View 1 (cartoon, rainbow, N blue to C red):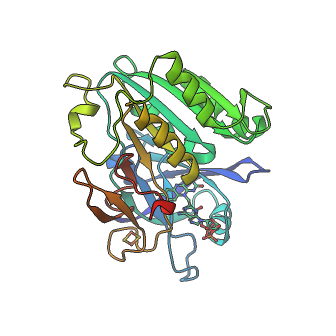
View 2: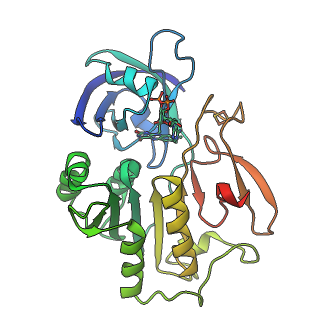
View 3: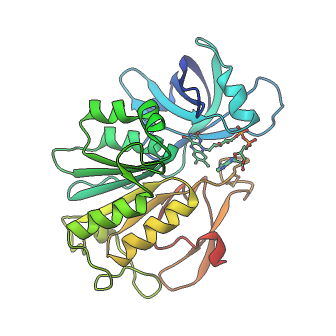
Length: 294
Ligand SMILES: Cc1cc2nc3c(=O)[nH]c(=O)nc-3n(C[C@H](O)[C@H](O)[C@H](O)COP(=O)(O)OP(=O)(O)OC[C@H]3O[C@@H](n4cnc5c(N)ncnc54)[C@H](O)[C@@H]3O)c2cc1C
Ligand code: FES
């Protein structure tokens, strides 16, 4: 799965937030699924030694292209920003499990900041004649939303609402307030349908609107850990199954080094360790043991 892909585009989208769009041509597009990632070698030398994981945000199988969006966070992504068109990039991928793809019902997508990126590929792949979609996106301000994805969402015809911390667009505040209002409008009331672990064995039927589901609505969330924890708590309290895409620092990216393990709790209440790179990055919200819970 180690491949060389050709850089078709590496474009700065938002100079302030330092967000880039990177389009690559090669073999990854043949098998990539929404929610998976690639592990990029950001320099031709051995420095830095470790690759950097970036989510697959767009998949065009016909053209053999994938699209990635990244924020310059440190040395690795700084080097990536210097890559030019027609150069090749060495990567491992596609990696990880990806999102569960619903065949019907309603899907609520919850994005915090750059957590919108992996959701683009999910939006692209869903059959919107069968799955009703709603996207809630929380970010710092209008400039960020406009530079990073509003145009894409509008081109895709996605039904969305946004919140900003400074109130420059949409509702002022956190995405949790948007989520609570949305669920309230739909009469999802706390308590009666709680999906909390332990003692509540979860089956795939919960996600399958043709099965004996509890909720026609399910959610998928990507973003910073604090946001994931908060939206998961709200969804589970209201009986809405949720999948979350976790981010951990990664070394090998292929399940060998145990550098990216997280703690999960199974339906029987027992704790276990899972590798975010191979068992994830997408997990059932009920199984995740958030950091401070130990
Ligand atoms: C599965 C997965 C998918 C990701 N997808 C994207 C994406 O689509 N777009 C994007 O911009 N970023 C994404 N990231 C985060 C990205 O991998 C890191 O920002 C990048 O590796 C930082 O490398 P660096 O050398 O530039 O920064 P470093 O110098 O290594 O770190 C700079 C800062 O970023 C933090 N950081 C580094 N790695 C991570 C990480 N894995 N998770 C959270 N914080 C981190 C560090 O704590 C530090 O504060 C993803 C991470 C994972 C695990
Ligand atoms: S990064 Fe090595 S096991 Fe996940």
